[in-house]
Image (cartoon, rainbow, N blue to C red; front, side, top):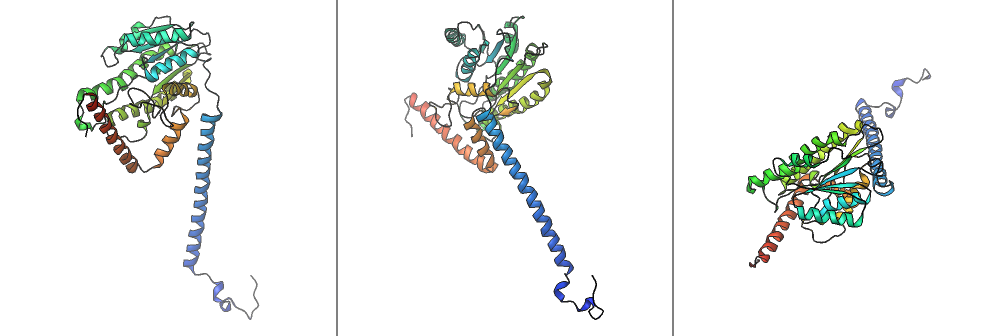
Length: 346
C-alpha cells in the first residue's frame, strides 16, 4: 500500500494493527464455524438418508416377489417352529405365495393341524411334516434325513426359539434352561442352516434362495433379566448379517428380523395393539422385506420406529426402563400362576 512520506505506518491508528492473539482467536472461530457447518451438513444428509430409506422400505417399495424363489411353482420352503404362532403364520403365508411347505416342530398333532389348515385353504399346496425336538442332540440329522433328495428347496425360515419362562437374573437360572436356550436358538439354527445351504443353492442362474432368521428387538437393545435369550438373538442378528455378505454372490437373500412385540404364547401378549402385532402380520411383513437388500431390520414399520426411538435413549437409562418392565412382567406372571393354582395373590 502506498503512503505519503509524511505519513508513516507507525502513525496509523492503533485499531489498524491486530494483536497476534486476536488473529489466532479469529482463526480458531473461523475453523470452528467451518467444522460446525460440515457437521451440520453431515447430520442433515444422515437424517435425510434415514427418512428416505424408511419411506422406501416401509411405504413405497412393493412387497418382495416370490417368483425368483419359485420359478417353476414346484419349490419348497422349510419352516422351523411351525406348529403355532409366527411359525404357523409363516407356513400359511408361504403357501399363499405358491410354495410347498415343510413343517418342523415338536408336536406331531399340532403339525398335522397346520398341514390340514394349509391344504384346506390351498388345495394345490403340498406339505411335509417333520416332528423334531430342536433341543435334541440329533435334531439336525433328523430334519435333513426326512427331506427327499429330489426336493427343490429354496426358502428356509429359522423361526424356532425358546426363552426363559420368567424374566430371571442369570445367577438364578437353571443351567439346563440356559443350555436349552443356546442349543435351540443358536446351535440348532446354525447347524441346520449349514446343512441346508448346499440344498438351497441353485446353479441355473434364475432361481434365488432365501434364509429368514427370526431375531428380536432384544438383539439390539439391552433387556435385563432376559440376558441369555437376548444374547442368543444378538448372535442370530450378527450371524445373519455376516451370512448375507457371504452368500450374496450365490444368489441368496438373507434377512434377520429384529421383530418386537407379537401376540404369541411365548411372548405372553393376549391381544394385539398399536405395538403388539398379530403373528400373521409379523410373517407377512418379513416375507415382504426379504429381498429389500437390507440384511437386518424390523420388518414392521411400527417396530422399526420403536427400535429407532429406543436406540436414541442413553443405554443406561434404557436398560433401567426395561429392567423395571421385566420386573413388572415377572410379578404379573407369578400372580397369574398363583391365581391359577388357587393361591392368595398379594
